[in-house]
Image 1 (cartoon, rainbow, N blue to C red):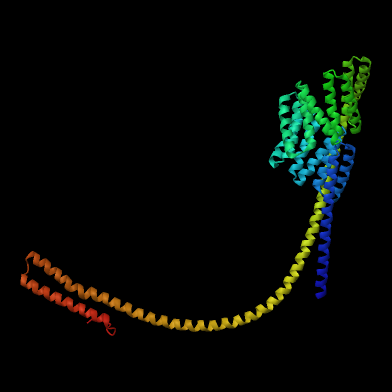
Image 2 (spheres, rainbow, N blue to C red):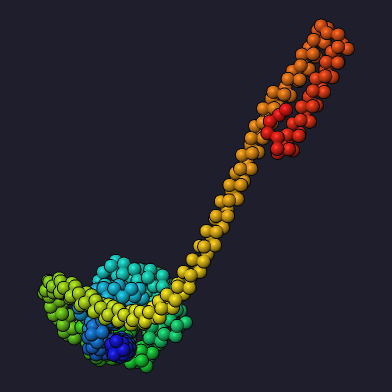
Length: 479
């Protein structure tokens, strides 16, 4: 028995240590997943290709340990990387997967961030759907009081209203977001706000204000090596210079923008620069160069038109594959959850068995002690029973005596009642008769008083006799 107990103790101790080591290892892996996802997100503007690679690495690690938040964030970062790589279909697929895993993890902040990203995805070609996602994100961000995300959403709402030509509404959102980012000391997003404000001022024909804001944004973006932002700002600056007929400065800024566009590998921005270069040469009246860039634009447009149907089919196919992958991921997550539950169930049962063994040993000792106490109590109970028997016997005698006494008293009361009824009522009846006769004048007054005196004397004797009966137990009948 002792060997068995020793074995169980050693087994459970080793088991607990192993479980603790596993938890520690999982915790370290979780931290590494978070670090890689953050690194991938930080590289989204400067190197979206590397962001995609890092996101895939984080996702593989998160799947291995069943870390749903890590999987969700990896999908979100991959979606952002694909957005900057101009792969909208793949980006949307990533975002849908991210929502599934954030919902499973109960992470409202993550859900809000993904809806914000989805709004950005539709911002350029479907304003209504973009607003739907942005306001859905804003509702969650307001609920959880995420000030940073609310500020970003205001930028994005401003972008949508900008594209809808609601310029003053857009300006309002941009100014509110800039004030929030200044409070949060978020330099990257402050640069974005400067760029957006510059674009709005340019559209409002406030060229000097627009130029000042855009140059400030360009300079700050270079300090932080934000290639995508520099290329985007340069595009607006080029249009502004062309509008002011400052063609040399426009050409210089276009060349700079093309270099940064090549670094970020953004086909859409490359198309925009071709179009801006065409406008530059056309306004310069260099029609030969303008025609060359117009042909380049036509080639891109033709290719885009031909691939639209193919893209839609690929999107449908990707959506179907995504659904299958999501279901498989859910099944895998359920299996992992079941394995973890089984592991902890076995651990708990083992611990309970150990507790039961300890309780059994303690119970044996308590049982022996209890038996001895019960023996003493049984002797005491026997003594108490004998005492109760004697007391009960004595009580019976007392009850018999009291019963006899009550019977005698009842008999006395019955006799007194009879005596009172027959002996006292007679003289009283005579008195009542004499009174009636006297009223009628049928008896002499003196004779009536004499007879009444006799009746009163008789009643007095009866009362004295009755009192004697009450105080003399030896008398049982009236005389």
